[in-house]
Amino acid sequence: MSVVFEKPKALADVTTHYCPGCTHGIIHRLVAEAIDELGVEGRTVGIASVGCSVMSYNYFNCDMIQSPHGRAPAVATGVKRTRPDCIVFTYQGDGDLAAIGTAETVHSATRGENITVIFVNNAIYGMTGGQMAPTSLPGQVTQTTPYGRDVHYAGYPVRVCEMLSTLDGVEYCERVTVDSVKNVMKAKKAIKKAFQNQIEGKGFSLVEVVSTCPTNWGLTPVDALGWLRENMLPYYPLGVYKDRSAQKEEK
Amino acid sequence: MSERVLMKGNEALAEAAIRAGCHHFFGYPITPQTELAAYMAKRMPKIGGTYLQAESEVAAINMVQGAAAAGIRAMTSSSSPGIALKLEGISYMCGSDLPAVIINVQRGGPGLGGIQPSQADYNLATKAPGHGDAHILVLAPSSVQEMVDLVAKAFDLADTYRMPAMILADGMLGQMMEPVVLPEEGHAREIEKPWAACGHHGQRKHNIVNSLYLQASELNEIVKKRFERYAKIEETEALAENYMTEDAEYIVTAFGATARIAKAAVREARKEGIKAGLIRPVTLWPFPKADFVKAAETAKAFLSVEMSMGEMVNDVRLAVECKKPVYFYGETGGVIPTPAQVLEQIRKIAGGAE
Ligand SMILES: Cc1ncc(C[n+]2csc(CCOP(=O)(O)OP(=O)(O)O)c2C)c(N)n1
Ligand code: SF4
Image: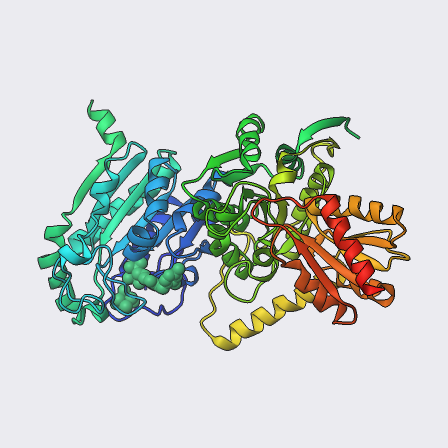
């Protein structure tokens, strides 16, 4: 019998705690596939952040460190600077990366740390039950913006790729999504490239994955994907925001 | 043995760390520990180590945490306001059983306080090094030579017991210049770290460095296990200098720079015929309780002298269990007590207690 579907080796054979239809599962798989294909599981150290993905330390088969809320890039810096042969990635939500951890994100990026950042943007604080995130859309109803996010009161969402692409230290940042097979393939390519860059010593690479949180959006998984397409993608356009090496080649 | 050299406290701390096998330093500028970081910035590139100026103390301690989790000796240094910011990381390191050394060259507080010497972080270091049930090792040098010796000890203890260690110094010690003998390079103890997250290389199951336990019973058990380790440390690692305590009726106690002043006062008191002695805790956690218990058998009273409003004094009270009166004398905010002022206090107690 031929095997048609296999779990990536870098993904542990356990049941995750993610809600049905949550895109965290797809993104985990893509990260694990990239690690497998590049053959680096044995020297990879993953940094789990605080958010729904905190227990990803149980889901990846590489060595894992659980970091304080927002500090994953600093922890990753500590690992990479002292163990340069390790392949180091962080896996962070939007609250973690773009609110409490903004300083760590911006400064690890501007230092050009040779790490890979997987950024899951689901426009909400999932783990704590659906509060406003730095990436919640204008007008978006959340537990803490019950009348919709009023930008004059609660401010505007943060566009991470756009912001980081202005920094000289950044090698690569791309925004992808996982709403369709085609986009999953693209996301896979981006994630693999973000790891490949690190292997080649190119520097800070971040992939933002526009994601869903059906549970806290109060939608079915399918409707959540529709909401993502209609509301998130216009505000967070997909694409490559910076690719330093490609830009150099063009010149 | 290497030759004697004249060194500033802050620089001696840095060089001692390097010789203890710590080749990775992460910090953020603050007075009065400046020379330490500057020294690291100069030395580390020459030995293939890391000096990294982080964006904040929060980031610096988390970089140390990353290095520690990867099984590498690493250090950060700061002064009181910056140490406050490191507490989050320190608590996580306690929860993840990670060793590292944190230098606190204390200055006056609260708030921005001042930049002069202080000992007002005693409670922070020994009682609440971050949230949750936890302890860190706290070592208090009182000379530049002891700064050198205790840095190496701090790394060894931290690695042995898998927990953070803090050197609780102050601005006076940091700025002080004294002759020191440095240990030779390349003789640092190496302690195996099979738990480190540094890549499994297909040789073992993956390591997880973590402080999260969502099952209350599991967390309960893990914290209790850790406290068994703490109890062992309290039994075996407490350290104090006893000076003229044998026949002392009045025990002065002080740590760090203040102990030097207290010692001078004790000597003066002896000249006046007052039987004074000094207990100088070298480890603040574990607190050298036994030395106080023993002294309480014969002493008439205790006097804790501190550069704070009185923090260690409470541990002295607990140690002597109200068997003898425990007095306090302190100055704070950067004001350094003089030997004459301490002597005055000893006289008062000796007179009052007759
Ligand atoms: C210092 C600190 N503050 C707050 C929290 C509570 N907290 C846990 S997860 C979380 C939000 C995470 O949201 P996000 O990063 O967007 O990830 P998601 O859960 O949506 O995947 C918060 C605020 C915490 N654990 N630590
Ligand atoms: S709460 Fe949201 S982000 Fe978290 S697991 Fe559930 S669906 Fe996913």
